[in-house]
Image 1: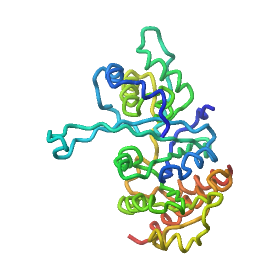
Image 2: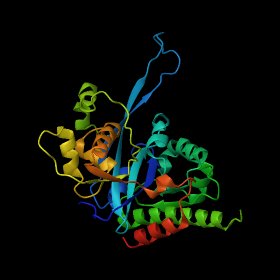
Image 3: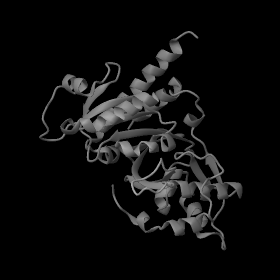
Image 4: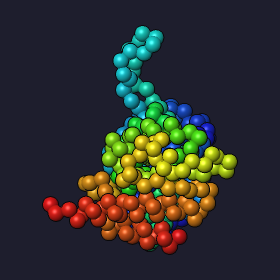
Length: 193
Length: 118
């Protein structure tokens, strides 16, 4: 499905989470196109000396990521990226996802520890985010308060429930994120300089 | 992570496509929208011709990358060739110009309206 000829402003939201947490499922639920996949190769200067005793040269890492798209109006097009949250992929964040509106951290209560690193990095980067718990059928039901506490998530960060397979639910997650960004933005504009 | 046709693209092949360059000279975001200004012409590098076919309607850099089955960095180099040759135009994202981490409330309001209308 091609974009309208008037489309002029691409926007980004990143969905971060561990392997198998439902990032692509969520992208698929709200995207107007079947999710696409592409790759980026990143060359990093080697650090120090590797285990074989040779001086490490440059290393090239290839990372695949999925994305979908939502036309918001005649000009604005929102791209949703599913980003792997593991530590070794975080150099991607700076290179690919700078200028993102904000992020959704998708968590699975069975593997909360997968999200710690992502949350830490987002706070460090000062990228605004919300946390959405994907409710898998049969997953143990913890209260959101218990999840907040387990993630050491500050009160100012919204935490919501969702079903990543459901279009309405995935849409609500995006609305929650953008609503959060909006309140942060209006609060900032209200501060006299 | 899904392994796909990209894995068949050896580094040598990609090196040839970009004629040895590893960096684009144009500043393109992954969501910069690209629009063709010209039709593919005989004698054009085949990747350039494929790009022109992919962006008859606006298409983001990542969509062109997915369509060509080539990494984003390689596609940016090919796009900067086409930009210099005046074969495409680039519509840059407004967020890339924002100096702070948060976009304007006015933009976010429009995003909210758009999402609510889904």
